[in-house]
Image (cartoon, rainbow, N blue to C red):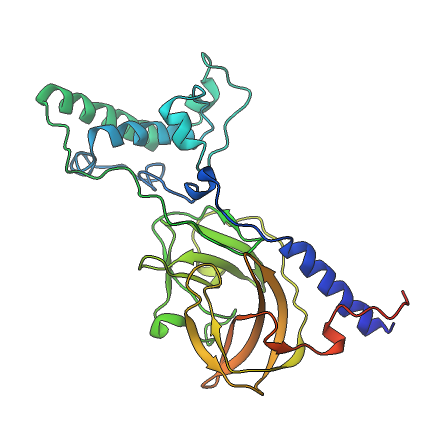
Length: 314
């Protein structure tokens, strides 16, 4: 086996480890996971009395406890807050706390969080006193539909309140979906795979129900702490499209096409990812722009150099 063949074989092995076996989010807890903050930025800005009054009385109970949940407050097992927050991927209970000692969670709250806590308590008190529980106000977040995301994409927490442009490849000159207007709102759930030269490859829910996208955001433009993720490495082999097929940025839900690839098109194979099926992740061009996306496995004539052939050496 040549050094080049060994390197490509190693890349494929690493890709297999990264992608792993298929996973389907079908368990009830996972289906409710995602970000699902009641008030996503209650830890970073002072709320107003008017906006707090915009929520239902019961919802404000969870908004109050969300402030402490961010710091690992350990709820009583089986309580309604326990049942809600333990389904949140960002919630990490502090196992050193006891049911009577929550000093760690209380002491970690900032002045802004304490202000918002007191405001929520005051509004709930006014609601009880007036009998106005605002039944038409904002209720609990509606859990998203189950996301059949490829293995390896894990929930990451980004600073709320950002709308960031999303590109199909790690470049601001690359193809951009939604007629060049694709955006991710960091108030929603974001799942990331890793970094590619300063860009984060992630999956997110688009603004309309049922549509997810995989794309890149420029981390130089992201405010707040950046997730600790691995650097990505791709195969890079050239291969041919065997049959006319759609190139999609949504392997999780709809499979909606970005462009159509004609049989015979030469593309660059990057890796293979798995959910309920297997998807080859590739790079090509569209109208002079670099574009990356997914085609069903079996659509490409993967060359011997990029396959997992084993010649008995090494």
